[in-house]
Length: 266
Image (cartoon, rainbow, N blue to C red):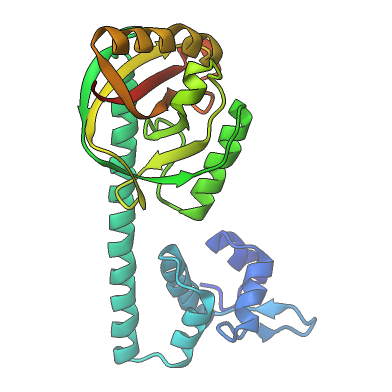
């Protein structure tokens, strides 16, 4: 076995950059000797520390905490840092469970999308649905993306774009009846922690594929005709929920949108 190793050899062995190794030296963790030519020389008293650093960095421990541990390393401090490791693992387990549940919901959305009835009005009984809302008028798809991003920034970590059928926009019935079918006044994202509520009740729903302009122009009259024939009246805004959009496919023919309108008897 060699007694001394160059910074290049250590960097190659641990898949680190020389800059990172020098940073460990600045923190006081590594204390290499110097050759006559001034080059750093590392011994096994340095390499075991790199083993510990690698393990703790895999658990996302800050380098400052790791440096403090090396300065006061004993059984009690080792127990403390292992307890911190365990807590980090628990948080990661919870995070991965949330990720798994999120992916499962997205897959369900796409599978349900393949069997969702199209261009047919249905009556749905919907529970109260908490949501986050941003009340700001807009009329373009690009504006909605921007507003939803602002909503996401206001509530970080609460919802996602791909495969999320809980995101939508609202149109007043006055605009609907005046054929202003793309004059929206709000965007929303349903979430259990939402501070606003889409109320419980009976909703007429109709879904369509393709472009929003053509789809709304085709399906909103069907919704209004059903409303009149069934002797019902609107009891709120028209909701436009996005199931499949530009975030999921580059083929506009695959876009899937569902319109929902809360109704009550005349």
